Image 1: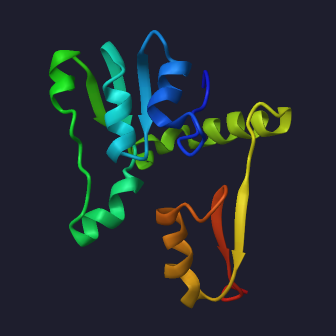
Image 2 (image 1 turned 180 degrees about the horizontal axis):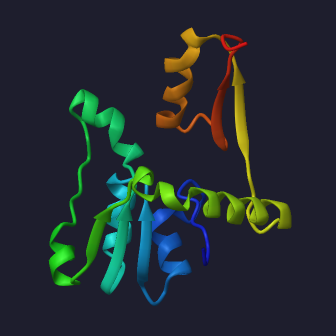
Length: 149
């Protein structure tokens, strides 16, 4: 990654993208969707590539009818963008290689790992997973239960 934008800081998402990517964006790996995807797509360079891995900003809205959806679809045509779904099970053959590379990055400090471990019972699963939708977690969200011995 060349940089990171914190959509919650004072600069905000759109100004943060403009600051970090003054010459536009060539590639984007999206697991957020919604307004984030729209903001990035409006800054994509011609012939840019987008990998869609998820749309967490839309999950709750899609369930209750208030989902945002992708609003900049015309930019796919205008900028001749390629948008493709990315599902990890399509890449199982490279899991071992990927885990080695990620492990090396964590060991060397080039990859920072943050986990948010919540302890509870299996009944706490829904409450815990909903933290992903509200931004209530800080890092990889894990529910540690005592149900598996």
